[in-house]
Each structure stands twice: as structure tokens, then as C-alpha cells.
Image (cartoon, rainbow, N blue to C red):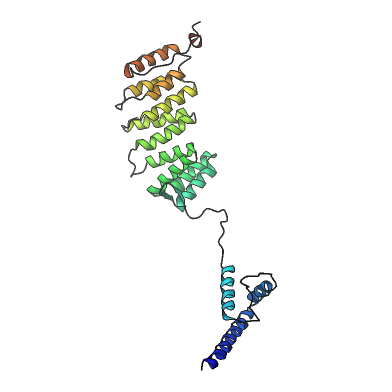
Length: 275
């Protein structure tokens, strides 16, 4: 029986292999693939049908490699995938459309106002905040300020010192002190107080803008703040007021009273123009 079973198993394997090979060769693209790799010199694991042994293993191995070869491959085409993200907050399609639209019409005041009325005003709360954050991230300061004024008119708006802080600092770094002061006054009306970083950047902005008097006004306001003072705005003033010795001496006296353990560098008198 064993002698009879051996030839039967061999014939069965041969028949199944021939049947599989016949079906594979009926598919034009697979036929071309097998014909191509039949002539390709590969000493190990041939992909083509083995006509000598006609083993079922080689046919199955060929089918597996065909499947691997023709498996769809996904390449990145450079376009953004899904929604944009900033931190953990998603920017939806409506918010993204508004951002692109604002940037497109920002140089035309009439079109900008019309776009704000027709598209920005109908955004949901989270979309408005997302648009504001994204405009700040892209350093579109003017558009971000316009977006803030829209948000301030909404029924759900609540005063938030951090919204003011980011905008005021961005405007100060851009030397747009008039806009920064409008936000400053609005913040004060809502009983919000700037922190030390905000004071520092506004003082620095006025000094860069060439307005030491305005910088001193912010300094006097800072001294009335309920928060404990910080060294940095003092040192910014002491450095920026070098051409104005009288103002600098006043700040220096305050600094020495508040921070008695800290030292101040005084440059030579020639810098003050006293000699």
C-alpha cells in the first residue's frame, strides 16, 4: 500500500500544480510577471513555475511573492493629511477656510471687513479660538488682533488675561505700540493685570520705538501692580535709559530699594555725555 500511495501522492501533487499554473497563466499581468522572472537569474527561491519538479510549494511561494509585489503601496504626496493641529486642539475645515480667506484679503480693508461679517462671525466658539491661535502662530498679528475684537463681541466671551498677553507681546515685538496700547487699555477696563513678562516686552517695545517717556509710564503702572516685581523689566529700563541719565537714576534708586542684594553695572560717565 505504501508503494502504491507514493506514486499517487506524486501524481496528485503534479496535477494540482499543473492546475494552479494553468489558472495563473490565464491572467495576463501574472503571466507577464512569471515570464519576466523566469528569465531573471535568481539562484535561490525562483519566482517562476518550476517545470522540472512542478512542486506545489514553488507555486504557492510564487503566489505569495506575487501578492507581496502587487500589494498597493501608499506614498506621501506632500499634501496635508487630515486637519491641522496646534497642541491638542484640532483646526476644522471651517476654521482653516477662514484662516486662508483672511490671509487672502488682508491687504484690502473693504474685502476684509466683508469677509469677517460673512464668514468669521458665524464660526463656533472653538473655531474662533483656534483661528486666533493659528494666526498668532503664523505671526499674522494684525489679523489676530482683528479676530480678537470679533471674539470680544461674542455672548460667550469672558475676559482672559492670556489672550491679551499673547497679542500685546506680539504687537510690542513688531513695534506696533499704538495697537498694543489699545489692547492694554481694554485689558485694564476688564480689571485684568499684566504679568512681569508683559510689562517687560511693552517697556522694551517702547524703548525700541524711541519713546522712553511711554516706557516710564508703563514702569509707573508696573509699580502699582499687585504682583511682586521682577528684576528683568528694571534691567531692561536701566539699559535702555542710558541716553537719559535723569530717568535712569530714578529707576536705579527704585531698583536698589526693592533688590538691595543685587548689583547694577554703571558704565563710564562718557556714555551719559557728562564729560
